[in-house]
Image 1 (cartoon, helix red, strand yellow):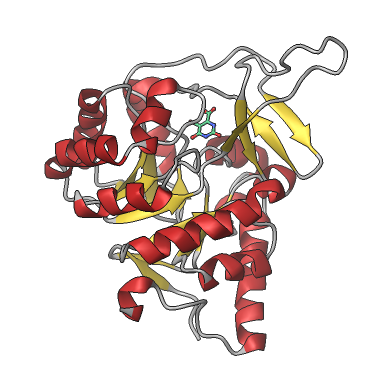
Image 2: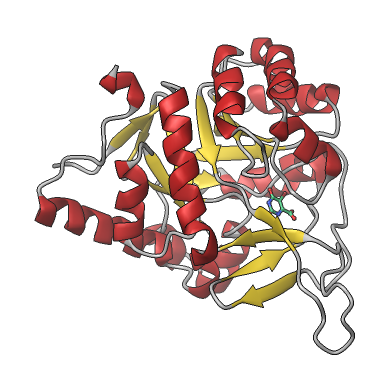
Length: 304
Ligand code: RRO
């Protein structure tokens, strides 16, 4: 069986991509040189969230390690749209895989401006709308509320023919309802889960450790949550789904596919092992071959 997949009309060599913000391809290219391009770990590259204006991000400390993962409170540091277009996009366009740009705005108009700008760029294969950042209030409100997500899609859908992927937050009361709202309003695909809100205290002072007070929990700690949420979303919609949350092995990826993911993203594991994406893709191919499964479960669109 070929591992190649069609995702929203984009041909991918295998079903493993990265989670936004968990792999800095520009820094990795600096560190590893062209060896990175010869053995790029992912079948598509999803860039860190871009906002309209440049942002410094949250004050440090920004990370706290957990027994089975970590908490981040990065706070969307980025060069802003203009900086991204002039400095990052030319470098990311040179990667040997399709580029998906993750964007976030603090209002619908801001997201509309970002979508319009990227819509004109041939280097960009698809856009991921981040409505799920747990560190910025508007992100949480948008992604937690089906009406807000529908209103956002209705505003930006007419602005581009590129595939629009909505990244859902697990910090919602009913992720299935948000997923359905996104589907009805014209999303092409959904991705989940983003991080789950959490916090850590400084053991010496008892005060919040993170500069942003709370942050997002990721890594193996959230894998069971991801499995349940991907299953819920798969039951609710027919759209392609990118599943992620604590994936460390091919077996973890297969589990997400069994509950309905079409693609799987590797996130926190890439901090430990920058080549994790490639390893997970190879392990997935092995486990699929040895168990005689052609895919996980059939996505809902093919089950109905
Ligand atoms: O930058 C962040 O702090 C951040 C973002 Br935008 C996100 O989507 N998820 C996350 O855990 N952290």
